Image (cartoon, rainbow, N blue to C red; front, side, top):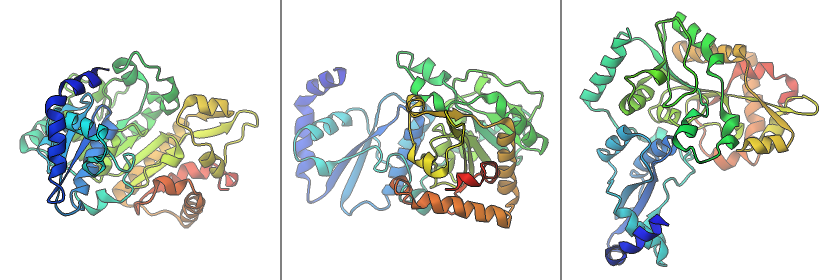
Length: 392
C-alpha cells in the first residue's frame, strides 16, 4: 500500500518520463531493471549477471538500474555504484512502475534476474563479472586478518553454516520454519575445521547473525560471526579472496563462485538445485523414507524436490543431516583436490559418470542446468556411502 501511494504521488512526473523514454525508440532503447537487494544471494548474483549481460546487449540499447528493497550489504552497494552498470536512485523505480502499468512497456523493462539467479548461460565464465576492490579496501581487510595472526600468502577458507538466527532476528514477524530443512549444526563441522587448521589452513566461520559460537582452541580457526571487527566490507572481501569456500548453500557463497573460487556445498538441499555452473563439489543431506527407512534413490530424490520442510514431512520423507565423519571426509576430499589438484581414482570417476548420467537424463535437470561447469561434481566420499541402490 505504501508503494502504491508513493507511485500515485509521483505520477505527475513519472508518467511523462515514461512516455519520453518510450519515444526515444527506435533511435535508442532504454531499459530499466530493479535489482533485488534484500537477500544477499540475489543481490550479488543478479548484479554479476547484468555485468555479464552488458557484453551481449542489443545494439543501441541503454540499461539503467535501481536497487529494489532493503540493502542486505552496504559494501556491495558501494561497489556496484562504481561498476560498469548505470545504477541510479530510487526515483527510477517510479518510472519502472508506471512503465509496467501502462500497456506497451515490455521492451523497456528487465527482471532482476532473467535466469532465477542461476548462471544458466555461463556468463560468469565467459566474462569477468567481478567488481574490483579499492587498494585501501584490500589493505584494510588484510590488516584485519593480520591482527588474528595470519601472514599474507597463507591460505584461508571461509565457512558458512546456515541456521535460522539471521532470519529470526531480521524478519521476526515471518514464520521461517519452512526453511528449517536447510539448517545445520555448526558443531558437526568442528573436526573438519580443525583438520584444515592442522594442515596450515586458516578457517573463518562466517555469518551475520548465528545461533551458536564456536568452541575451538586452534588459533587458526576464527569465529568471525562473533567478532567485533566484522563488517560488510570484510563479508564481501573474505568470500571474494579466499582459497576456497565451504557452505551449506546460503547465498553469499555465490559471490565466491562469481570470483571463481572453488566451493564445497555440504549438507545442501535440494540436490536438483546444485550450483552446477560453478567450480564446485555438492554433498547433500540424506533423504530417508519414514516407513521403510531406506535412503531415496537418485531418481526418487529428483522427483521429490521440495523447498519446504512441510512438503518433505507430508510426503513421508525425513531430512537427515550428514554425520561429522562424512562432513570431515568431504572437506578433506575438497581441500586435497583444491590445493593439490588430486585426481580421482578410476572407480571414483566411474561413479561420478554414473551419477551425472542419471542426473542429466532427468527432464527436471534441464530446467536449471543449461550450463554446467567443467569442474562441477558430486562428493565422491559421500557417494561411496550411499550404496549401489542409490544410482538408479
